[in-house]
Each structure stands twice: as structure tokens, then as C-alpha cells.
Image (cartoon, rainbow, N blue to C red):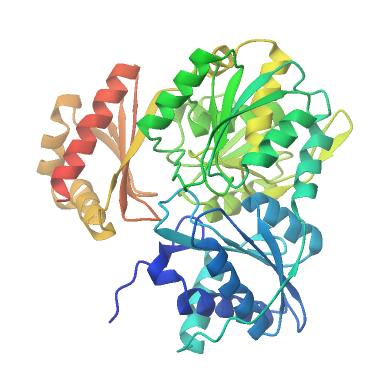
Length: 475
């Protein structure tokens, strides 16, 4: 049996470039197209939109995807380099499926494919069907890449979506730093901010791919934000991950807000009566009176999308989904001052960035004060890289059920373990009220550690302690 890093994770198929580029990418796209043909979602001659991020391997893989679409009897449409949510919006408007070539926030030696139906991101059942068709087709060779797909400009509709909803003077007077690095959305962010009346200040543009993970920020990114805030008078600093579906928002002092806080501020701005968010998001979201309905899910946009459908079916008016990484999914239409924003049930970075900045403008106060008013628990997260998933799962099993004495000893200094939650990984509520959550990343060989504690110092100490604990147990 040949071992491979390729797998469907929290959002799409991911793996090492050397194990995705070539026949694997071609074969998985052929399987996706076969699924669409089977259930009538794409007939002969139907279009499939293809987009990509800015990592080095993406143009080649996108060409292989286009060849697979053509060989499946469908028509590939090249949308070029653009944010994942812009591609999803174009697919919905055109009534066509789509494929995004992106590894999102993971390093440049990895890449991935995100698959979309005309109505939005595929679900877990679709993933299983793609894998079944992949096995059934059993393709053995990559054909010559000869397809020259037609091109389509898809960015303008994405830009117009937000300019029309927020209004041309919505951010007038704000000066916003834009950490551009290698985000595929780096230019459109500046364009939209300027169109809304803000003064964007481009910062840190890179032609080398930088894996910015909004849940595990690199120390150098945090240092850069503080430096820029100290050098310039900025109302905020914003950025995204590689494919621009996860936001980064820092306050006027260069302190980054957690993604779930950005999601909550977005839901507040939009007037949501129901939010859908994974178990890794801050426990403060469950506080009575904050939102009428709170649905908790496993980590991953397919689970959030399913939760949004559940909330809508149960009568919620405005449904907003978001993850701890900050990506916001809009599950229903929003109308404000006669302006309409259509649902977009895929992770998006621009909506939370603009909503948070609009709150700063509306409340005429610093972002730091708006963030403090949310009274979130102090929550931190980080990761251990190159930890095989089976080692993470072994640690979780030992802590959960196999070895109670081991668990009690490990957390004795925190009052032991008061409660356990296995909805996704293992979330432990400790006797002193703090929480520790271990889970395997769905996208890479990484062990994720999340903590909550009453003070920043306690949270930092708890995170460092449990990263060290997990590292020792998974060597």
C-alpha cells in the first residue's frame, strides 16, 4: 500500500505538492466531474470555473485541473489568481461548479483543491463520493496538458458586492494598514478599502509565499504589526491567509484579535440572531443574551455549513457562521438601510474585515475598546508541526478513556479534569475553570492546542505547558 499525505480535511483536499501535482490532481478532478455528471449537476458542455492562489505550484496544478475538466466532457473556465470566496461567488452567480487550487495557510511545499457546487462548498457526503469515483475510475496516467481554457474576470463582482452593501463613505476617515505578504487578496483589499473612503496603507508585500496561519500566528508577524502600529497612526491593520478566506485584524496598537472575536463582531454588526461556530471558539459566545441561538459544531466549514442550514430550518432570520480562524460564512441575506447582501455560504475574509472596521467607524472609538467590550475569555492557540495524526489520536485516547490516572496526574496542578468533550478532538474543562483542547489538524500533520484562562499570563503559561506536554507525549 502506497502511503500518501493527500486527504480531505477541514476544507478541501490537501497534501504535499509532490503527492498532489500531476496524476493525483488530475484524477481527483476527474472524479469530481464524474460525481457532477452522475447527479445532473453538470451536463455535457457545462462549465467549471478554476481559480488559484499565489503559491509556486498553483499554476501547474490549475492547468492539470483544466485538462481533467476538459477530458470529462466539461468546459474549464480560468478565473486566474483570486480569493477563494470570489471564485465561490462567481460560481454561484454563473450557476456553475468550481475548483480552487490552494493550500490556504499551510507551507509552500503543500497545496490543495477546494471543490464547489453551484450552490456552494461541497459537503462531507460529496467528499466520500469523490473518493469513491476516484477509486472507480482508477486512472493510471496523466495525459498531455493541451487544454487552453477560456478566461473569465471574476474579481469585479466580488469588489462590487461589498462596495454596494457598505456604501462608498462607510469607512471615510479611517487609515488602515494592509499586511499584504503573499495573500491572493492583497490588492482587492486595498481597492475595496479605498472605494469605501478609507486610506489603505500597503505593508509587507512579498513575492515569496508566506504561510500565514490566523490560528497560529508567527512571532515575526506579531512583531511586524506592533512595529507598523508604532511607526504610523493606524486605526487597524488587516490581512488574510493565502487564499483570502480567513481574516487577520489587529487594533490600533498592532495587537491581533482572535478570529472568533472578529466573527462575533461581524455577527453583531450584521444583526445575527443565530451564530454557528465550532467547539474551539471562545466559551464567551455561549453567554446568555449575546445571541438568540448558538449552534456548536466540529471544526471545518462543511460542519458549519450544515449547522447554518439547521439554524435556518429552525426559523432563524439572519444566520452567521464563523470559525476560530476568523473565516465568516453568511447563511442568509442581510438588508441594512435598503442595501442587500446576498448569502455566501463559504469562508470569507473580506466580510469580517469590513464589518469590524465599520463598527470602528460607527462607534467612533478605538478597535481595542470595542474588542474589550465583548468580554471574551483569554484564549490562545498554537500548534506542534510534523506530528503524525495517529500520535495525536493516541494521546487523545489516553487522556480521554484509556488512562484516568495519567489524565489526573497531568492536570493535578489545575484541579484535575472536571469535564470532557469529544465532539472534535478532546476539550478538557479543568477544576480551576480553565480549558485545554487537543485536536489533530485536518489539513496537515499538526497537533493543535487551544486554551482558555482568566488572565493573559495564565493563558500563556497554560498554552506553553500543554504544548510542551503534548510534544513530550508524541515524540
